[in-house]
Length: 81
Image 1 (cartoon, helix red, strand yellow):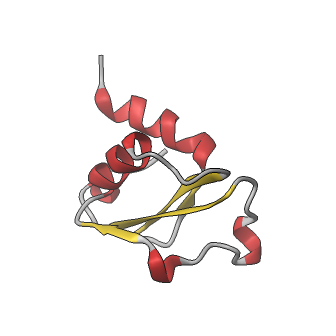
Image 2 (cartoon, helix red, strand yellow):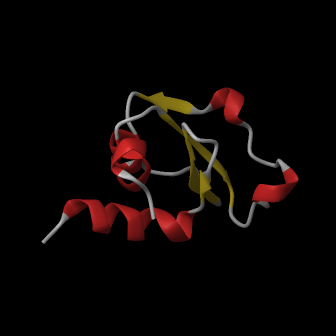
Image 3 (cartoon, helix red, strand yellow):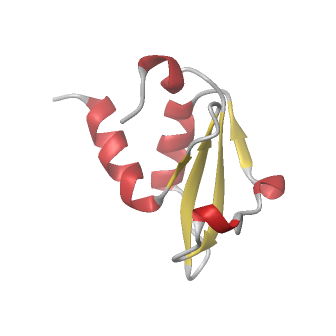
């Protein structure tokens, strides 16, 4: 999923329309919320109220884009038992 190092590095969260195509560059990262760690970004992405018809996407410091389907899985995995 993500490495411990990735969890501690900067990340950004953007809300885009549901079904945005990651490979088509449809996500506007210029207006994204920026966080000091991926852990903070994940928490905010999963607790913030998204605009109607939009979903959160996370950009990691390594350039990986995490789509909404992965966010909950990753967050659950870093929370532990």
